[in-house]
Image (cartoon, rainbow, N blue to C red; front, side, top):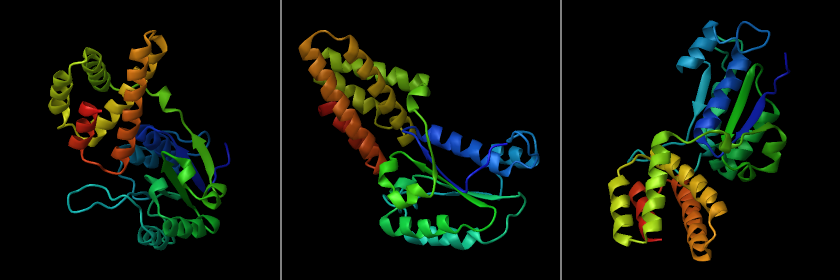
Length: 251
């Protein structure tokens, strides 16, 4: 059986993929059967799959009064995790913390985390989920094993692909009213669906760019890809969904 580290960084552009890899890694650390873990059938594995294991703790950004995630993960959250980490596991042989959006930790939070990674409590491990590993301090990265996943390997949902094709058709029509109507019709989407659509649209536009021969059409596709990149950033800092679709309708 492979020797596991006490700290990992899971890097992927896909939030869903990061979560899946982190959960699989946590199961390896906590599986009670041993051997080629995770077995998938022991009590610990089943509880992890069901999302109810008391020794698998997820640390997420706090939310504001509107229910939106705050831009940064704070040092107080890391200190709270550090205090909890010294408490023995409830059931499993190990305790695992999954830190979502770890690349949003501010400098103070990262320095606090670094102290924890340098001298972790016994049988405690950490999995940092990030979209951009470069936002982590080099000192933090040096204490972790990095796992990079290519989001291209994960196909967008059928719904996201359908939205992307509709958006492409509206763009190619050159009809601003049609593009505005499409945007208004979709601005009630939640952040997850919007992120999936933006990812699917970028893939579609890049693919179309490779086949396009007309110089003017190529330029238009490249401009839209830049706009979609902006949307990805704005989604990460919790810009309102209506603003995202508003940008798509006028840019």
